[in-house]
Length: 253
Length: 253
DNA sequence: CGTGCAATTGAGCACCGTCAAGTTATGTGG
DNA sequence: CCACATAACTTGACGGTGCTCAATTGCACG
Image (cartoon, rainbow over all chains, first blue to last red):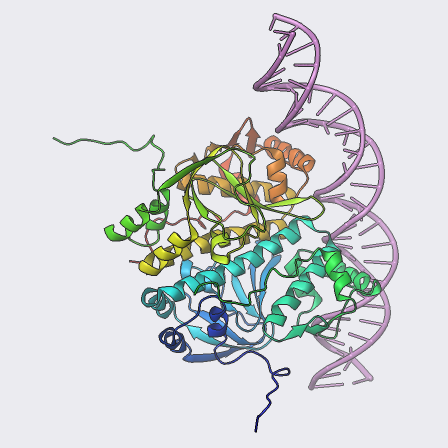
């Protein structure tokens, strides 16, 4: 007798999202998986709106996000802020802080979040003992950088509507990778102020543009949900590169 | 008898700019220096304006810039381009292309350049055999990402004048690190179109703003030279973090 | 039923883009 | 040495995108 198991509804996230993520880049040996496993000791919870990491803080630990959303941002002297990126389950928080020994940005949970804490020493130790993992983390960092670059291009050269559409599509792609979204849409805990700070517009203008996108039958952002009324048209409008986050097989044997 | 050697006038660049750069992060053993040395086999020259790497190209080698300036950029479908970053001697070109196995951007020499070519395989081999070097390269990548992030903040949240001033100051800081500039100024092969594409403004507006900065006695951009008429005032005006690239001692013993 | 926050809408204006013309600097060929 | 071409820079006029200020609505929560 055969048991049929359906995974459709289950989130792909497990207790070791990092292993899953790095496994997409290098095929990990059991010894290497074991090393990773030992990183998952300290599970912590942070509340929405209370920073984990402050700009300028030194010798910080880093975190692996298990559940919830966070954002990393920088503050300017005049009080404005620019959100650099949002993090979703499976992402690193503050990896750069560890490698550079100083945090050049702050990190704030958007919702309540659960993380595992990894001390700088432990991480660097892992790198020294298992070079393949160092390479794998370099890959993660490169992927993050690619996203920041795409974000930069959007802010620098796209109009407000394309920019917002592109932003919502990128979130969709990332969430789909971890089983939290689809072409139909996704649950999104962001408000219009957060979006405004992320894409370099005022909240008022974000609101106006969201209305346009809704009225043109592309995307609807409402009540904590993003719904694509017409995914393909939105992709075409935003000039979105559908496959740039696709990464289905290990690149390093 | 003692030989006194003056280094003042000599460019700090040697034939191994990467060794010098990584040495700022980890203290390298002679064995590790030796491994690095073997990367420097193929020296190549590229002419200004002829791309080294094209967006979308696969399984690309990467390069270490020995002399000249380059820029990495992305093209949009409507023909606009966004320059993500400029590279100066000692910088990696296309490291992300190697790690991600696909280039998500193009790289173009701004001047004629000399580079050493490093094959993806050799680089990954170095990582496997000398984990400290892998960590060091991760550090380099993180530093690059920090610069992209700063660039993002500038485009998203700073007005045109602050943005340009900040941009010129950041170049100054980077060039000073490799002995090619000082608070007085530096030689700069960029034209106003390149600056416009880098900071997300039109060339016309860049020109207007440069005039303002000159008339307010802050910076002068002219004839391939950037001259700071009043460095401190420029720093204050641009809200520039003077020390964010400072890295005078190795962080990892 | 008030309080507070997010979303919404309008009016007016500033910054910056576009178009267009003109200037300077440099090089090329006769 | 001059005519011409080209690239980079410069300046002005005009219009639009997106910002600021301000008021209103809707909704959750006590």
